[in-house]
Image (tube, rainbow, N blue to C red; front, side, top):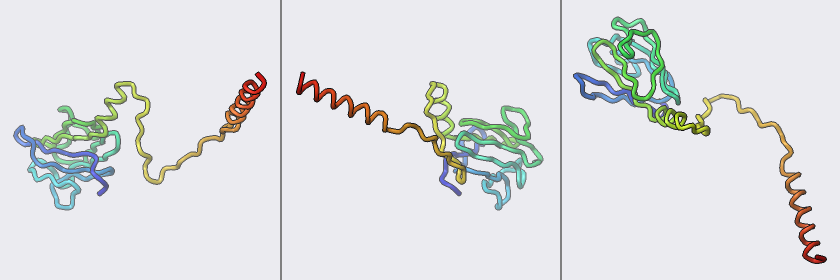
Length: 155
Protein backbone atom coordinates (compact mmCIF):
# COMPACT_ATOMS: atom_id res chain seq x y z
CA UNK A 1 0.00 0.00 0.00
CA UNK A 2 1.19 3.50 -0.74
CA UNK A 3 1.65 6.00 2.07
CA UNK A 4 -1.68 6.73 3.84
CA UNK A 5 -3.39 9.96 2.82
CA UNK A 6 -6.87 9.23 4.18
CA UNK A 7 -8.66 7.26 6.87
CA UNK A 8 -11.92 5.35 6.98
CA UNK A 9 -13.55 5.32 10.42
CA UNK A 10 -16.23 2.79 11.37
CA UNK A 11 -19.05 4.14 13.55
CA UNK A 12 -21.01 1.63 15.60
CA UNK A 13 -23.85 2.66 17.87
CA UNK A 14 -22.96 6.32 17.36
CA UNK A 15 -19.34 5.95 18.49
CA UNK A 16 -16.14 5.78 16.44
CA UNK A 17 -14.69 2.28 16.13
CA UNK A 18 -11.98 0.77 13.95
CA UNK A 19 -9.83 3.08 11.84
CA UNK A 20 -8.48 1.99 8.45
CA UNK A 21 -5.56 3.86 6.85
CA UNK A 22 -5.93 4.38 3.08
CA UNK A 23 -3.31 5.16 0.46
CA UNK A 24 -3.84 6.34 -3.10
CA UNK A 25 -5.60 3.90 -5.38
CA UNK A 26 -8.38 1.35 -5.30
CA UNK A 27 -9.46 -0.46 -2.12
CA UNK A 28 -12.00 -3.29 -1.94
CA UNK A 29 -14.23 -3.02 1.14
CA UNK A 30 -15.80 -6.23 2.37
CA UNK A 31 -16.30 -8.86 5.02
CA UNK A 32 -13.79 -11.49 3.76
CA UNK A 33 -10.14 -11.64 4.73
CA UNK A 34 -9.12 -11.04 1.08
CA UNK A 35 -10.63 -7.55 1.03
CA UNK A 36 -8.25 -4.59 1.26
CA UNK A 37 -10.35 -3.17 4.11
CA UNK A 38 -12.05 -5.86 6.19
CA UNK A 39 -15.30 -4.72 7.81
CA UNK A 40 -16.53 -7.31 10.31
CA UNK A 41 -20.25 -6.53 10.28
CA UNK A 42 -23.31 -8.64 9.36
CA UNK A 43 -24.63 -5.97 6.94
CA UNK A 44 -21.42 -5.98 4.89
CA UNK A 45 -21.17 -8.28 1.85
CA UNK A 46 -18.03 -10.33 1.16
CA UNK A 47 -17.03 -7.84 -1.58
CA UNK A 48 -19.28 -4.89 -0.81
CA UNK A 49 -17.77 -1.83 -2.50
CA UNK A 50 -14.70 -0.35 -4.11
CA UNK A 51 -13.21 2.89 -2.80
CA UNK A 52 -10.93 4.82 -5.15
CA UNK A 53 -8.79 7.30 -3.18
CA UNK A 54 -7.28 10.29 -5.01
CA UNK A 55 -5.53 13.47 -3.88
CA UNK A 56 -8.85 15.34 -4.12
CA UNK A 57 -11.15 12.90 -2.29
CA UNK A 58 -12.58 9.49 -3.12
CA UNK A 59 -15.19 7.66 -5.17
CA UNK A 60 -17.26 4.81 -3.73
CA UNK A 61 -18.73 2.20 -6.09
CA UNK A 62 -21.15 -0.55 -5.07
CA UNK A 63 -20.07 -4.06 -6.14
CA UNK A 64 -23.66 -5.40 -6.38
CA UNK A 65 -23.83 -5.89 -2.62
CA UNK A 66 -26.92 -7.15 -0.78
CA UNK A 67 -27.49 -3.99 1.31
CA UNK A 68 -26.05 -1.47 -1.15
CA UNK A 69 -24.22 1.77 -0.42
CA UNK A 70 -26.08 4.69 1.12
CA UNK A 71 -24.62 8.20 0.80
CA UNK A 72 -26.62 10.94 2.50
CA UNK A 73 -29.46 8.46 3.01
CA UNK A 74 -29.76 7.61 -0.71
CA UNK A 75 -28.83 4.28 -2.23
CA UNK A 76 -26.20 4.87 -4.92
CA UNK A 77 -24.29 2.79 -7.44
CA UNK A 78 -21.40 5.29 -7.33
CA UNK A 79 -20.74 8.59 -5.54
CA UNK A 80 -18.02 11.16 -4.98
CA UNK A 81 -16.82 11.47 -1.37
CA UNK A 82 -15.02 14.36 0.28
CA UNK A 83 -13.43 14.87 3.69
CA UNK A 84 -16.08 14.15 6.32
CA UNK A 85 -18.40 12.26 3.96
CA UNK A 86 -20.60 9.70 5.72
CA UNK A 87 -21.85 6.58 3.99
CA UNK A 88 -23.42 3.35 5.17
CA UNK A 89 -23.49 -0.36 4.43
CA UNK A 90 -26.77 -1.29 6.12
CA UNK A 91 -26.41 -0.31 9.79
CA UNK A 92 -22.61 0.18 9.58
CA UNK A 93 -21.75 3.86 9.17
CA UNK A 94 -18.37 4.86 7.75
CA UNK A 95 -16.75 8.32 7.72
CA UNK A 96 -13.97 9.34 5.32
CA UNK A 97 -11.24 11.59 6.73
CA UNK A 98 -9.17 13.08 3.92
CA UNK A 99 -6.96 15.99 5.12
CA UNK A 100 -5.67 16.71 1.60
CA UNK A 101 -9.20 17.20 0.29
CA UNK A 102 -10.01 19.40 3.30
CA UNK A 103 -6.99 21.67 2.69
CA UNK A 104 -7.70 21.86 -1.05
CA UNK A 105 -11.34 22.81 -0.41
CA UNK A 106 -10.40 25.55 2.10
CA UNK A 107 -7.74 27.01 -0.22
CA UNK A 108 -10.07 26.95 -3.23
CA UNK A 109 -12.87 28.59 -1.21
CA UNK A 110 -10.42 31.33 -0.18
CA UNK A 111 -9.52 31.98 -3.81
CA UNK A 112 -6.00 30.55 -3.54
CA UNK A 113 -4.84 29.98 -7.12
CA UNK A 114 -1.67 28.05 -6.27
CA UNK A 115 -3.26 24.77 -5.20
CA UNK A 116 -1.18 22.07 -6.87
CA UNK A 117 -1.53 18.32 -6.93
CA UNK A 118 1.38 15.93 -7.63
CA UNK A 119 1.32 14.39 -11.09
CA UNK A 120 0.19 10.76 -11.28
CA UNK A 121 3.02 8.30 -11.82
CA UNK A 122 3.75 7.90 -15.52
CA UNK A 123 2.08 11.14 -16.57
CA UNK A 124 3.76 13.16 -19.28
CA UNK A 125 5.59 16.36 -18.39
CA UNK A 126 5.35 18.93 -21.19
CA UNK A 127 8.30 21.33 -21.54
CA UNK A 128 7.52 25.04 -21.48
CA UNK A 129 7.93 26.88 -24.79
CA UNK A 130 11.23 28.71 -25.12
CA UNK A 131 10.99 32.45 -24.57
CA UNK A 132 13.48 35.28 -24.98
CA UNK A 133 15.29 34.16 -21.84
CA UNK A 134 17.63 36.54 -20.05
CA UNK A 135 19.41 38.00 -23.09
CA UNK A 136 17.27 41.14 -23.41
CA UNK A 137 17.23 42.03 -19.68
CA UNK A 138 21.01 41.43 -19.44
CA UNK A 139 21.73 43.72 -22.39
CA UNK A 140 19.45 46.42 -20.98
CA UNK A 141 21.24 46.28 -17.61
CA UNK A 142 24.63 46.44 -19.32
CA UNK A 143 23.65 49.51 -21.41
CA UNK A 144 22.27 51.20 -18.29
CA UNK A 145 25.50 50.52 -16.37
CA UNK A 146 27.66 51.95 -19.20
CA UNK A 147 25.48 55.09 -19.40
CA UNK A 148 25.65 55.53 -15.64
CA UNK A 149 29.46 55.26 -15.65
CA UNK A 150 29.74 57.75 -18.54
CA UNK A 151 27.47 60.17 -16.67
CA UNK A 152 29.54 59.88 -13.50
CA UNK A 153 32.89 60.27 -15.30
CA UNK A 154 31.98 63.03 -17.79
CA UNK A 155 28.95 64.39 -16.08
